[in-house]
Length: 386
Image (cartoon, rainbow, N blue to C red; front, side, top):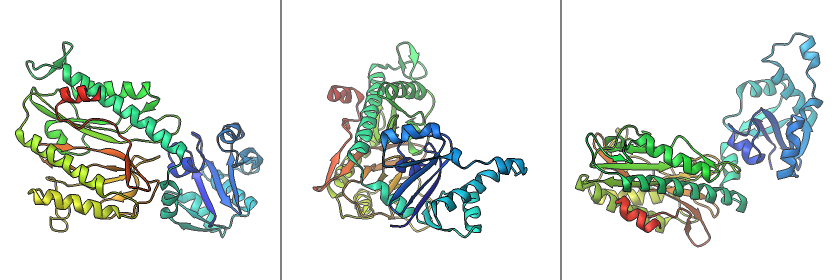
């Protein structure tokens, strides 16, 4: 096994959070070499790390004092780089793999001292793909939070009524922001957070990354993409549902039926040993047979804003988007992968439909972790959810 070196904090670096499953906001060094797993970290963090993973050897960062550098007037920005070189020497680390986000300044300093660093993101991605029981517990907890947030949205939609200038609920305008706030509140009640969710109305729903804003029209369609993160484990879930209020364009209902069919097609094809790209292509072919453009049907280099213009899905874990890929370029799925399947149809300036579940790849196929109805009508959805 190659040596491993990581530098950062476990809030911003998910590769480091996977190796050291504790939230640590200050940068530190972590290495794997000769069977050792070593965290060189401020001593106040040591007990918390040991409590969750006693297999990690704690080396207090205070044992590498920088007083001599300070006395010599070293530049404050150079001191951490010198310290990294000193720590590598003390550990006997002269070669290691690092992720693509490894800090360049530290890499330059180490290489100048003769340390060989090799960027190998695949190795770090592969370490994280087969989820443990504990990691799955975090994903399931985040999924329950997502479902609770979606239920809160459905409840407000169901109770809303048409009014002058758009829909209203409890005497107040029904806005995307109000729906987002209701979902976020439920996330918190379930020990999760996630304030960058998507609740997009009408033409906004045609843009897969528009968060959504403003008041819902009396006849409207709403794409709700919720991806809360579990506070304790830091693992995500990801789910999307589409709802219609009033009497939206009939085309939306057709798109929704076709997209639910596409989701079930993908669910039946996804399994260990299958390349995610093959599942994506099968869904593209399904949509193309029904007259919709896809990534696979348009000429190379074409800007595609209508039809099925994005990948079918992605891995979910410490990042909401991680390996494996289920798109034009795909990974072979393995047992333990947690993935999403999210087919959708859109037309720029008009609207869109998307459905998304989180699933676990098992020995026999897939287990759907998401537990929520797919109905376009929020009233029927609310009844089914109960």
